Amino acid sequence: MTRASLALILLAGCYQGREITELSPEMTAVVAGNNAFAVDVYSQIAAEDDGNLFLSPFSMSAALGMTMAGAETTTLEEMRAVLQVGLDDGLFHENFGALMRDLSGHHRGRPYQLAVANRLFGQQGMSWKAPFMGVCTDDYDAPLQEMDYVGDAEGARHDINAWVADQTEDKIEELLGAGSIDASTRMVLVNAIYFKADWASQFEESNTAPLPFTLASGEEIDVPTMQQTVEASVYSDAAVSVLRLPYETDELSMIIALPAEPDGVADLEAGLSAEQVDAWLDGMDEGGDVAVKLPRFEMRYELSLKETLSAMGMPSAFDPDTVDLSGMTDDAALVVDDVIHEAYVKVDEEGTEAAAATAVVTREMSASIPAEFFAQHPFVFFIRDDVTGSILFMGRVADPSLPAAEG
Image 1 (cartoon, rainbow, N blue to C red):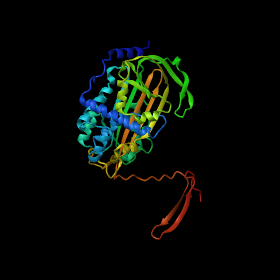
Image 2: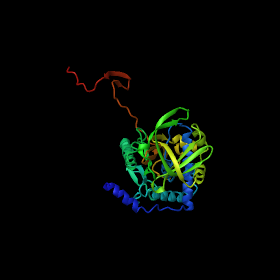
Image 3: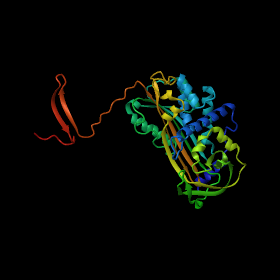
Image 4: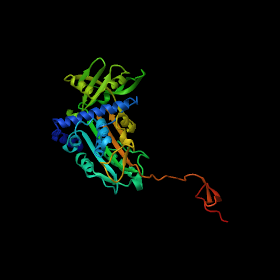
């Protein structure tokens, strides 16, 4: 046994369990609202994309929750409705923060990794309002890191991406793509979440073999499929079978909803709701031996949420004519330029590794963005007298590295 393995066993033996063991009415309301938003945003995206899909609605809720702390009037009301906030703002932020801290309890020696991190990246020299900063720092554990978007937007983008990569064990390396921020950017509010856990009962790699997988189109392909008989809980009816596959310590699990027919996912998603998921879980048997066959898979998903969130009911945040983020600062009139999300997941015989990050990018509406003219290939030029309009000289630069000819 290696020293590292022994250390993990000792840590697991010291694990005392989660701090939150019973939900208060306020915490129940936060979880219910987050789950309702999760299903809503998933359904909105799933309706527009029939391929592989993976995202973290929890990460989105965290980044948007911080943004909501700086929203006012119509923008605030729309965000509350879309995020399914059922408490007053103060209680919502306080309990959401407590939930994130409990989930992130990586210091307790538990045998799985789950970490949630938030950060504000604000333009240097700007003054941010105390109530907004108080919510972000006290409830979301999101300190402010000053950036120079005006003078070095590309350097700021690199620094934000480096922070996200560090928080996600390098699984999300470039959340912000080229051009996603510029000299008008003033605040980027970021959440990152990382998860890694072993199955309570791991699959034997020697049992993994190619087995048929039928696509929605009816086409049959062979994919590496993990196999084991394991004690697990199942719900089933004429339309769907639902498996709960626990991770080590039984504090987290993967829920797999399998429609009865290969082309049944669309109908399943059309009727999906947080209440439906709860009903499946409540209707599960007490657990028994289940012969599980699960494809091994890995995927990455990236998207802009601007159109999705607008369609869900919060268009004003992205509209310069209606946005109100005056709760953040008096130094500039801000608008949400985009909400960017990326998620990664890998499921194999040992367990699951997943990571996601969400960035809410705000910009100053009145800021002037310097135009760029990059003479990076041959060009023609003129020297002109602007009083008379007379062209005095003309020329072409084909290779600026050539020396001037001796004359």
